[in-house]
Image (cartoon, rainbow, N blue to C red; front, side, top):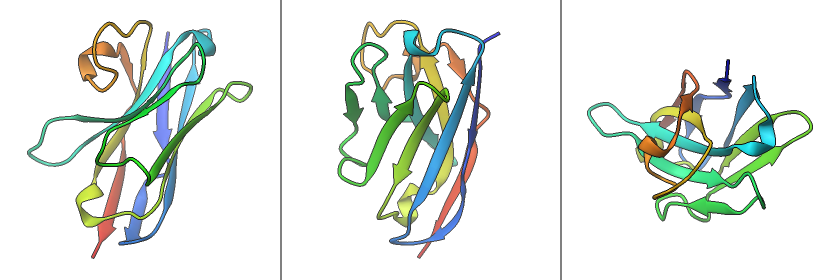
Length: 125
């Protein structure tokens, strides 16, 4: 089975940093596109960043561009999301997900087949 497990969330003050990690198992790691998403209470799940399986190209939503960085460690089978300059509006549950084929937007949750369980990020003002 394909499994993803997100970790690294927590409580941080505005302006602070966190690094989320997504542990990936159960398939050939470098065959899959990995994305990070978040969902705040009462809001739709939002795609934030994504990294390609083929050439490590990265993609960022405008809301996080310049503050968040996605990276992958193929040897250790982890994908990271470094989050700097956190704002209260970044408060949400963060998820990682994998896709075996992007045919539309890399930010669309429907493009992703498998999901981790989510990790809470809370940013205080």
